[in-house]
Length: 79
Image 1: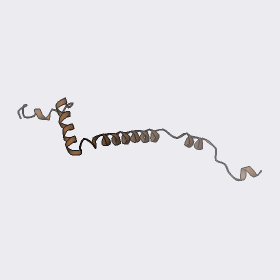
Image 2: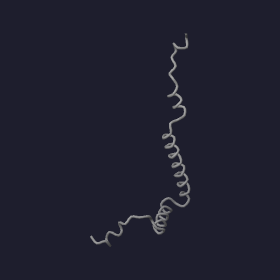
Image 3: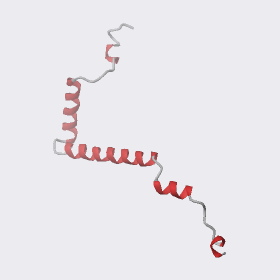
Image 4: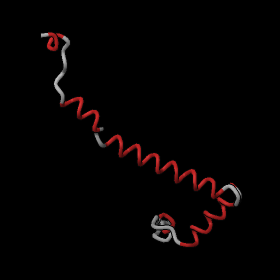
């Protein structure tokens, strides 16, 4: 194949022209009034996702305390 025919397959960072085209399509599709609402909800969703991911990665302090304490038995207290 000719390298000129594969030039469109050169995926890289989008330029300003491509970004403007995508924004124009989004405005036409969703409307200018709805775009800020969508961006705000996307930001909230990403924040919640990151928060949940961080909480899942760290063991909770309560869980560690329960694991390190010896188990209490009822018979040991009645001596």
